[in-house]
Amino acid sequence: MNAFLHDLARHAFLQHALLAGLLASVACGVVGTYVVARRIAYIAGAISHCVLGGIGAAGWLSATAGWDWLRPLHGAILAAVAAAVVIGAVSLRARQSEDTVIGALWAIGMASGIVFIARTPGYQEDLIGYLFGNILLVAPADLWLVAGLDVAVLLLGLLFYHQFQAVCFDEEFARLRGVRVETFYLLLLVLTALTVVLLVTVVGIVLVIALLVLPAAVAGHFARTLWQMMGLAALASAAFTTGGLALSYGLNLPSGAVIVLLAGGVYLALSARGLARWRRS
View 1: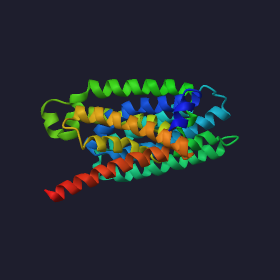
View 2: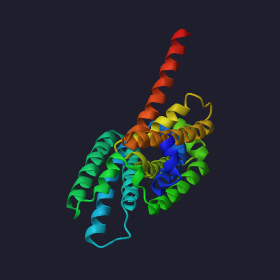
View 3: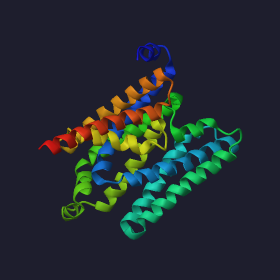
View 4: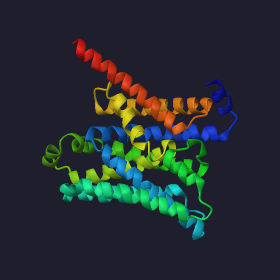
């Protein structure tokens, strides 16, 4: 920890990594709470794997078409939002096909991403970093994009708090109150997609579901309202990303994996304590 704090003041890449983790934690706390309450983690998983297709396509176009302005995160945003809209439309119109479509998009997103990466001249190693996460490689340009996404997610998530709350807990009651359930469900999936893109920069595509869900699940042990759960989830996510980054830096381990292991360990410890209390009572 001392080495991390000492180098943090000297190296810009550590400062960028820490800032990216803190920025992503804000959206993670808000949207992760909605995901846990609505129980759509499996949809978030499909969206996260579709992101690889967008990242690969952006990298391929940048290398072959001369689009130097196109960054992998731009492709990630487009792929994530498109996947969210498709899955949401199928969920609302043809629920019996939902699992099939989710599985198909999950596989197609991964496969297309691998193909694009393989065809990219020079084989962009940093694209592979998005699969397993490498927060230490966050560029300053990506930080501005992450901050913009963070602001958009936070504003929409809080602006439509009551509508999202109604959609998460009681759709029928929401319809009776005049809430456009389909519209806000699709918007919730889009917010989830944007948050997935934020978290991909921290822990990678494979582990993104864990960081989206675990802080909110930890907050659920202490919160009594959805507002409290969001705030505690954001704080927990910030603690996990900061602590995991410091531990991984000192131990020379993959940062994304350490962040998720730290979050998972805290969640399992709280769950075990809760189970022990339940048995005693």
